[in-house]
Every structure is written in C-alpha cells, then in structure tokens.
Image (tube, rainbow, N blue to C red; front, top):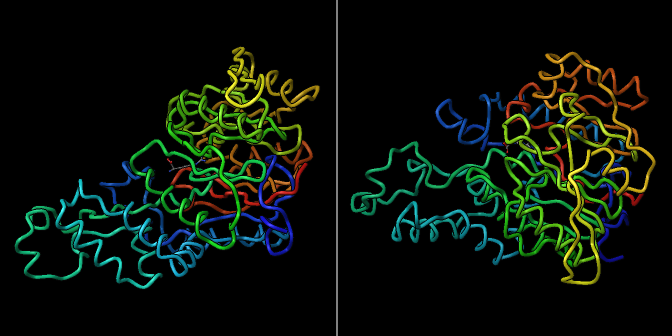
Length: 412
Ligand SMILES: NC(=[NH2+])NCCC[C@H](N)C(=O)O
C-alpha cells in the first residue's frame, strides 16, 4: 500500500481520537541548552529546563506511547536520515538557516560553504541547536576582516536555536491522508517549518504523501487545529493563527475536499492561551476537556463549503462553540468534561497544560501527572488517563498534545 507505515497503517488522520498508530515527537536536545535568562522570553520558554531531566521525561512520554502500540518517530532521526539521502534537503536546510540579513553576504557565503561540508548528524545538530559566533569555523584572516564577526558578541547566535521544535504539533499536521506544513507566527519559531518541510519532502517514509494547505500564506499553527470529526475542523484564532490564516486554511481544505465545515474559534491573545489546544482538547469521539473559565464564553464562526473548487464558502455565527461544534459534527451534544475546579486551581492547571491531552484512542489520553485535579475529574468521567511527568518539559508551556504530531490514526 502506498502512503502507509511499515505495519500497513495508512498515513493520515481524520480525528483527534482515532486509535493512534504512528506519531512524530522530538526528543529535546542541545537546542534547550541554549536557553538563558536573557533569551528565554524571546525563545518562548518560561524558565530554563534541566535538559537531562527533560530528556528523561520525554523518554518516559515516548515509552507510554510505545506501550500502547504506537510507533514513535523522532524528528531528529528523521532529519539526519533525510540529509543523508538528499542533497536537495541538505541545501534547503542550510539556505533556511543562514541569513544574509543577519550575517552579511560574505559571512553568509562562508558559513554556507562550511555547512555543506558537515556530516549529516553534525549538520542536523546545527540546524536544530543553532550556532553562536564563537562556534563559527576558524578562519583567522576572515575573522580579522569581517566587521560582522568582530562586532557581534561571541555568544550571540549566527544561527538561532529552535528549542520549540519539541512541540511538533505546531510545525506540521495531518488531515485526511495529507500533511500540512504550517506557517508559524513568531520569529522564534518560523524556521521550524523548513525542517518539517524537508523531512516530508525527502524522507522515504513519506514518499508519495500529498500536501494540504500548500500556499500556507498566513499564519496557521497546528496547536490551533483540532480535527473534531471527519470533515469537521476547529481552528483557534488568537495569538498565533490569524483570521486570514483560518480563512485561507478553510478555503484550501474545502478545495481539496478534506473538510466540509471549519469552525473559527476566537481565543484570547494571551500567552496562557496561545493555541486552542491549551484550553480545549478532545478526549473521546464526542467529548472535550475544557478550561472552565471559558466554557460559557467560547464561541465559533461556522464556515461551510458551499460548492466546488473556488466557490465562496458561507460564514455564519458567532454561536456558542459547543453548540456549533455539535451541529457541525452531526451529534446531539458535545460533552464537556466538567473539571468543576475552583478558579485558582483551574487557572494553575490550565497554565500547566492540564487541558492539553493527547488521545491514543477514544477515551484514553496522555496527560501530565502534575495536574492532579483535572486528571481526577477526567477519570471520574470515565476517561482513562495515562500520566507522564513534565516538570522540566512543561517550562516550554506545552503538554502531551503540543509535543506530538500524529502521523497515522485509525479512521473513526
Ligand atoms: N500546541 C501548543 N500548545 N504548543 C505549545 C507551544 C509552546 C511554545 N513555547 C510556544 O510558545 O510556541
């Protein structure tokens, strides 16, 4: 079968909860060691993770998934394998990383030349962990004559690190049998998609897979995209995904017949709710876990396909999200698992990604163990909760859903 994983599961996904077969994670590496108190805000981390512990926690996450029969692909490995096989991928990765705007023409050329000589593993490491001016290849003459080298501080980045690669949810997603390379809103993350792009384009694992949302003109981040049901997609619009992004995505999904209804869901433009999946994720075919503070106010515009390719869609609403979602999904009611928490606990657990669960099958989710109350309520509602620890992982503000890109799920 084309476009299937080695065990014969078709690539792609039409829901949030269909049995998970293959997932792409990124085991955090040296890119996290670049974080300092001075750059962490800009690099979108709220603290400095203890990297070894973060890796252990991540290994634990991967293990829980494997125990459930999920095949775990690691982005770092895919990247090395891609660069090994494809000269075009190598060039593509280098071109996206080396900025003449930052380095000037001469240094940019010199660095490009140097990177081309690196072994695949070393190049992959530069592409993910970045490079400081101190780490630029030795070249005494060039160093003397380069104003750029002389005026930059040695610890500044000639190539920025990508600590948020950990959150593989955001830089690509699958819908139906296709993958979409997103368009990340913030400068700290925008280069991530150059890596997912080259992996999907050149890794044999994805040979023949087709793209969705090809124009990816306006910002759309995967954390905002929820596959509520086959053909029905919710898109958060807030700090990251813009109205233009949601509209462009909806039109392209309609044109490719990957969806018939898209719900555009306004979310507060705040760090705590940067993506829709920080406040709401699906835990069963007809159930979500949701941050209680927004339960009564979350709304949605409903965008529907009206005809064939290029036809203008219809836009209605806004209406309460839960009603709009149930209607679009063709179910009587979307169950909202009532975490019933007091406002302070709810806010704390939302901040720690309590609502950011990853379903491995209907009614079975992975969640951080620290969100004790939210997990208790989920269990009381009949959801099986597999816990992982994330004391260090969580400092990047992302939970199990953010840290995973489902590549193959059984259709619902
Ligand atoms: N899907 C998500 N909620 N991803 C979380 C991403 C966290 C990351 N530090 C950022 O600010 O972009």
